[in-house]
Length: 188
Image (cartoon, rainbow, N blue to C red; front, side):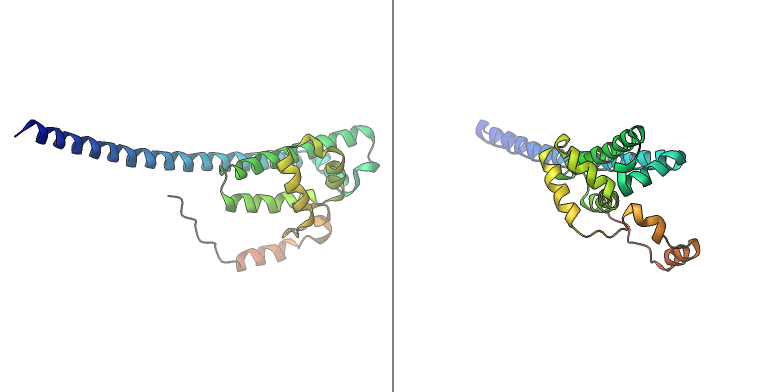
């Protein structure tokens, strides 16, 4: 064999090696992206659970939050400050989730479901009042999105009205049993 032929064979083998490496690298990047989205989904869920846990473990806090969502202006100063700090936590949690979604680091369906949950809180008079006073503490993209969300219809009952319109336990269990299970999403 001539040296030129051996050189050509070497180049073909090297090119094949590069192609195989690129295919492997692209699969690793895709797997890393999925892992990042799953980790962000877990973080968003954990943040939701932490905020909810505070309210269901501390009935005084739950009572305060309900009263603050209805009208925080009538609260004594200490309760108003506490409720405003709780509202700030909710909004910052939503802001972080929104940022992750905008950056493609949070699954669209998870974000859409989370947003409906958030809107049930954000549309209450107390949250709206807090937002009007403190929106400058949030990034411009989140402020613009909040403006849209506050005007958009919500699929969930506004949280401050829930106690008045909640179905009885027997009604909700029948509705739950009547629903068909959702298709499990593919998560390759």
